[in-house]
Length: 258
Ligand SMILES: Nc1ncnc2c1ncn2[C@@H]1O[C@H](COP(=O)(O)OP(=O)(O)OP(=O)(O)O)[C@@H](O)[C@H]1O
Ligand SMILES: [Mg+2]
Image (cartoon, rainbow, N blue to C red; front, top):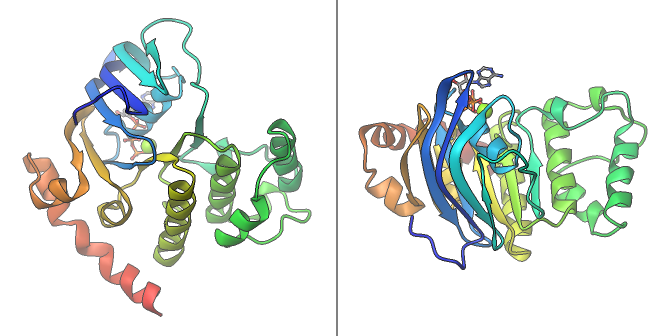
C-alpha cells in the first residue's frame, strides 16, 4: 500500500524476534484516518505480535528494526524507550487480560470514565453492543463474549484515533459477531476512528474492512484494498484463504435473517 504523510499510521521495515527466532519480517503498510484494516492469517502467523509492537509492548517479541509513524509522530521501534502512542485504544485477544478479576465491572468502568474526565455516550454504546446493565457483576459472572464486548465499549470510550481489536469476534456466535462489528463500524465511521482488526474470518473482514493484510509465517504476503485482494489475490496463500472464505457465510446470513 502506498503511504503518504496524510496517513494516520505508517509502519515500515518491522522485523522482530522472540528468543532468537524471527517472528515478524520486514512488515510495512499504511492506514488512513477512519479506515478499517483486517489483519488475517493462520495461528502463529504473528498477528497479535504485530498489534502488540504497534502498541509499544515489547515482550515477548523484541523489535530488531522498523519505524512507526502515528498521527505525525515517528518512532524507531528498535530503540529502548518506546511507549504506547497516544490515541490508540486496544482490546486484547483474551478478555482476561483486560479486566481485574477481583473488581466489579462497574468499578472498572467508572475508573476509566474518571480517568477520561467523565465524558461520553457510554450507555448508548453499551446498549448498541447488546450489553446488560453492569449492576454488581464481577468479570467472572459474564461470558467471554460479553466481557469482550464490554472491552470494546471501554475502548470506544477513550475516543481514540485508532482502535486495535485482536480477534474481537472469536468468542461470539455469528449473529452477535455481525451485530458487534456493525456497531463498531457505525461508531468508528461517525467519529473518523481507524480500526485494525485481527480476524480469522475473511468473510467478516470482506464485509467491514477497507484494506486487508494477510500474514503468513511472520511475513506480510498480501496487503491492499479489500475488493482487489478478494478479486485478485497476489500469492498462493492469499488465494487459498480467499477461495475458502465463504464456508461460514451461510450461517451468518441465515442467523442474521432470522
Ligand atoms: N510468549 C511466547 N513465547 C514464545 N513464543 C511466542 C510467545 N508468544 C508468541 N510466540 C510465537 O510468536 C509467533 C507469533 O505468535 P502470535 O501470537 O503473534 O500469532 P497469532 O498470529 O496472533 O496467532 P493466533 O491466531 O493463534 O492468535 C508464533 O510462532 C508463536 O509461537
Ligand atoms: Mg493472536
